[in-house]
Image 1: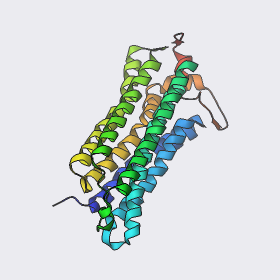
Image 2: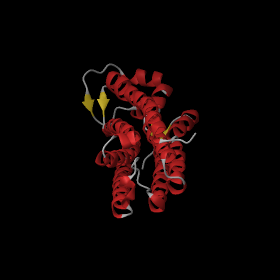
Image 3: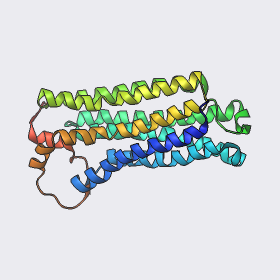
Image 4: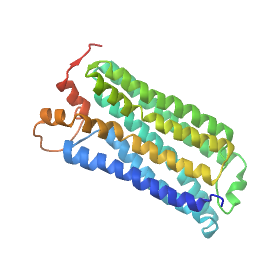
Length: 282
């Protein structure tokens, strides 16, 4: 039995529930109830959640096909496409700002802010390219029962290039930051492993890009939903997992805090700067 957009609808919903649960645990149970402090990494995680929440209704509309008007079918495709990219790049920006939270030196922060701008520009590039290809190319897809633009080779190659480079940056950046923080080798290895989870998003992205190039259609759309939800889930791991690793140390040094604030220096590795701990000079 062939995979259709009906499967896309329900797989998107199931994956959304997983990613949304992980993100809400991070934002509500950990950041709000435990730390009572949000920062830009939490904002982008929340933005990613909002984008994914909009992506899912778009997926359901795409799956309705001939049951809805032509203009709504076209709008559904663009909703899915726009919020697909928006979810993924919001998740990547969340990781960048998580790394910025732990950066001890201004020079490192400036470089990482440059990385954030670079990621934002890639986000804009991919969205713009999608609209350009779908509007300036063959428009016959708009008249099909299930409207889905064939993005083609250019989009697939751009997606592979931008995602591979970006996820490698997300692996290398924490290594660069952690080299200046003296912690036990065991803890260092575990933290590096957590940040390296960005490579899971890379693998999902490569699989999706291959389908964009070789097999456009419902399976490509489903793989896009997988990549979306993996990216959003992974961006929460550098906050949640290390918090469990150093829970006792954090509780010891945090003390009692009241009120809620929005700022950079309340995260698990901020605590490390107090616990370990020694920071190497820049």
